[in-house]
Length: 259
Image 1 (cartoon, rainbow, N blue to C red):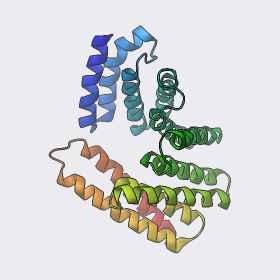
Image 2: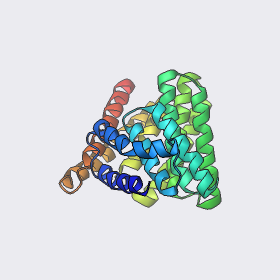
Image 3: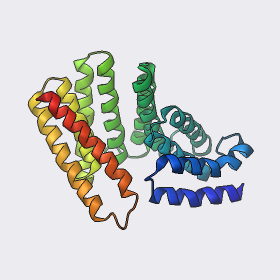
Image 4: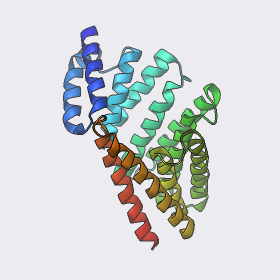
């Protein structure tokens, strides 16, 4: 299985450079993993292979195969707890990715229990951050931002201004951390700002929602222009530009709704 692992590592490096055709690359990656699956019953048996499976789960998220992403990332979570312990910081990224898969499943099924599970993942991730890292760590911003989006999704099921106000608090916390660490003109900051714009829209605070939406659009556009400038050296930038274009479309729709 060392050969299978080395092949996976090589292909993983390739995937990280070019994700322009994620469905095709997923199929190639799965083919390379097949011998490993047959030998281990698709359970990662080392920290190294856990990382491979984590990236594979993230690829499934990118292509909106939320059920498959959830299954893969659940195995990664259990494996990391076994090899690294239940409070290892690496679990934070896995748990935030799991929460995204669960939100995707909620959107497909409208099963509110998926949001409850997403909350569990994010609460567990934040507990690890508070114990092992820092409340001002960038991972805390990631978890808080995800928590805000979960609360906004919950509002679509049970209309609750209290939930949305909590979402605003989470977005503000994430924005403060990201602004200090990264500045404003980056995708992470813009994503949290877009989330706050939607939350303010739900609260019918339309002036602030409009302001946040336009600012988010500005920062997303700056990030996209920066990626275009380095496109020749970074082929994977195309995937990130598609992501930004989708975010800009969502913001245009929100602005139209406000108007």
